[in-house]
Amino acid sequence: MVARDWSVPLGPFEVTTGPPINGGVAEESHSANVAVVVPFRWPLQFGRLKKNKNYVPGVPLSQIDLNTPTSTINFVLFEAYAALIDAARVFAPGDFWYWVVTSAIADNTPRDEQEFGLSIGPEPGKPFILGQRRRRLPV
Image (tube, rainbow, N blue to C red; front, side, top):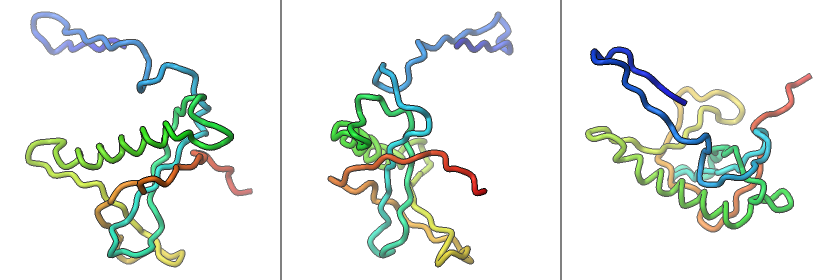
């Protein structure tokens, strides 16, 4: 991919990116429908609210064993999210970003005010599961 800036008075400034390889593994991945589900824990004072989660697509074929993420990808994703949650506080000078979990629904009805709290990250030692990023539409 090449990007050009034509606002520079002495001619176009050009930036070229590297090869189209995302992430750190250059191998075939599962379809976009297959994702590793990474759940986030609520702070302890909130009790048992439903866990928020991220769906991580682009899972390499070698990292799924019988519909289960391998221990390698579990470890890598746990460490990556733990580092991301810790680093969020220092993304920009003067701005303090925090990773939060939220709940807009209680007992199948919308809350008057959204519940939120600081995330304490994924659960250590608990393996992640596979999930679908798309669902069938209701008939």
